[in-house]
Image 1 (cartoon, rainbow, N blue to C red):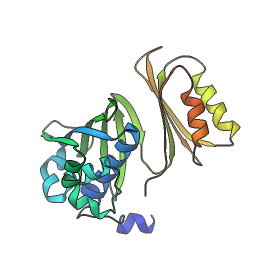
Image 2: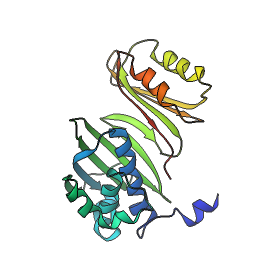
Image 3: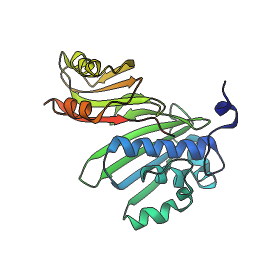
Image 4: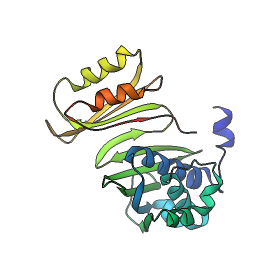
Length: 220
């Protein structure tokens, strides 16, 4: 256990799980969408649903979606900042049981028409996990360099992407692949020991089967 685990993250707000964690989920969603969001439908579950107003969970998620970190004072004015950007927000709560009590589902519409649905959980101490992306199982913590690829499933894709990374001496620490079915859409999540350069992201993106390729740096 390190000092961070004892005292928690530097943050704005009263709770590392309900405020800092919520902001980090929003920020990861911001990076994964890769477009300026213009509309968000947010659903809180469990503990989030019961206490989101008092803990500022709604403000934290919105600030993250706007690109602000957990320690940014802008969290306090998230609704005002969203209104200035004409960012439409709908917030609901659900009594349905989820895998974790601190769960939020976010449906996003981007400026250029891109849509995305993510489900994230706040694990405490500011730690989070994106558990689903567009219905796919996932596991993105925001604590490592991560390459997220959405593509049409076919043989050879994993080895080809791995070879592109090896060419630049980028070591893979962990890889997860999820798919809806054989030759259907798939998601590949690769954690690496170092940042994936933009040139490598562009090279992978140029593959005809690729729908989206996003490199995510560790969050603060």
